[in-house]
Length: 138
Image (cartoon, rainbow, N blue to C red; front, side, top):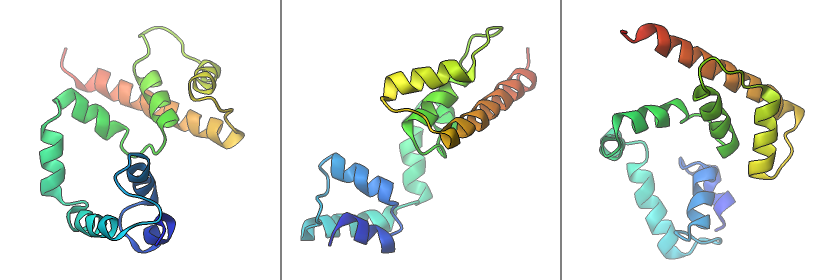
């Protein structure tokens, strides 16, 4: 069985399966040992106790940063969010600057849809900065 075929009926996302393949943990096509390992992984997938244990080993700051970007699927999106979130106070950071940084760093040109996504990411980061600024006691 190949990875994409396995992903169709598995609760483990294909993106995660491809990561495991790149890391050399599983192979494509899947061998018997890979299937056994994936069956075990499916048993513990999304179990709160396992997640809690993994997250507890991270600092609170690292946990919060991780949770803020957990739903951003690609590295360039997480990079953009972090870049907008951590910009220096009082300094402007334009979309075009971030587009150029992403294109240089990740070696691909952003399409119109991706640039539109970048506007949503910037807005989300600005809202998070605003909430943090006005919710924390001074």
